[in-house]
Length: 238
Length: 238
DNA sequence: GCAATAGTGTCTATGAGACAGTATCCC
DNA sequence: GGGATACTGTCTCATAGACACTATTGC
Image: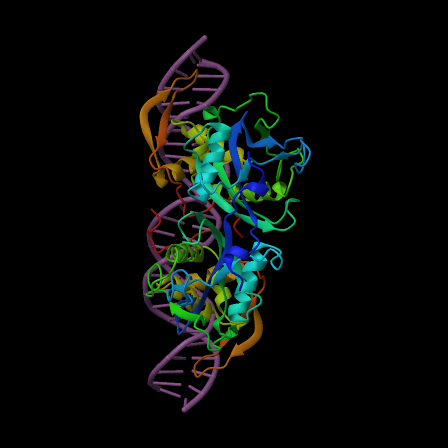
């Protein structure tokens, strides 16, 4: 076997699929590829990401956090490693490995940096397995994988709670689930399940409203909770 | 931002946690680190793995497959990406990123290459979150993560089927589940669940035995199946 | 018949889903 | 009161788990 010093090293990058609910729709944060000569996929959209800096990034997760912070200003999102993709062909500049994370956060916390750059990050609505815009590299594949993981996990975890602000009502939470799942869920079953899972607690406050005020809740735990069953309309399990 | 050509590139490796049932126990395949000077963790045990060869390995999965084939001779295991770990400290030779896979296979298919090398791979019984031997690098962490993923998934997937030979009885399958879960499951509920999931089919043959012969089954699909609920002893769902 | 394992039936508790009903707010 | 949303109760059905029962083999 060759010594590591003589091995040809692949390039290593981290990409992040950042999701939030904007305008009652699930959206993902994308950046535009620079239009300069020598840059691959000029003008295309892409997931925020870039090279691992072996001096700055203590770990892969730290690198993902850094990139997320740089684009959104958010410091404490839900962040989960999705997986890694590597091949000689996914980037024209050579063999690359990318480690992809996906993040969930509350859009209100985000301050997009629109300081005149072409690469200004923008929310793009999710449409089916991706977005309408054409993505560079294999990012359409990465985004599709992120969406699949997200939708899959929403069926049996408390993930949508991370899309909401600090305090929220059960109706807000249900709405977040319905937005991600793209289908309605039964209110009674939903509330029973959420309260049984014991991951939220009442703040003691109510949300003022023109109609009956709703109790406000907050997360009891910062880690997602697994439910013992998936959401499933009657008879869908067979 | 620096150009990729001038960036310091981390080393990229792939490691594989290969599991099988040997002597009615869950075991993992480990290799011994070479004892030469300059090699880190000499004499320690480690997960099989090594550098990505940008000329040989078309993808990360291809690289994992190659390493698995080199150690076991097996060509079609169940192989799943577990995740990636990267930091400056996990390998004394510098910043490394490792992409970890876990594999499930039937021990009978394995031909261990014991051709006099020190690095000969060996089955080691899983004990709690790892093995009794001391592992080099951060492989104890990686192995613990693999075990956690495995045990977690076994609760709601057909993964243990990949630990069995081509054809097997329902009792064999139940035994595989019990070995991985390290607890007994109810026979009736187990059989109902397995047959309802519709991922196995009778071969038409029976297993001869000193007692009542059992029907033999084979997998209908090569991909794992998800069950709508986890295994859970009455009242454990809280 | 006996031992041993394969396979089935029966009962009960749980909880999801469907949906209707009640409660509480502002106007 | 009326409209709107928050929240609860009731019914039914599917199925997991517990456990006992029957079936089929070799001896």
